[in-house]
Length: 92
Picture 1 (spheres, rainbow, N blue to C red):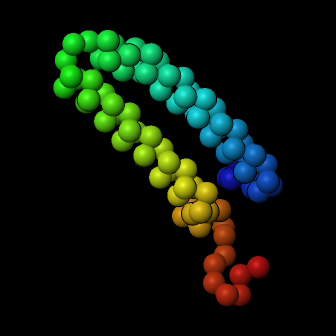
Picture 2: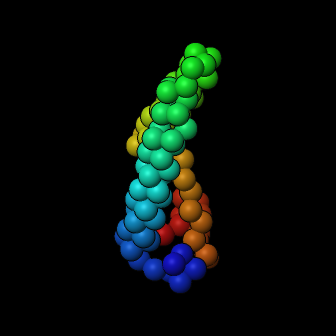
């Protein structure tokens, strides 16, 4: 879309759609992990394995939160270069 010089809003909407789809997949995988791996460890007898899975989930949730915060506050983290883009103070 960028190479085709499509309207910026159209590009942004496509990006949001892709992000939404990835988040849905991420949520499904996380749910399956909780229902399978984590629940299995919590039903087991090993206190060490139970604690490992609890710590794993906590660390994962912390990473998710940091990434969400970074995305919400860091729009300037991403720089898209458009073909034939002029840069500098006189670029318009």
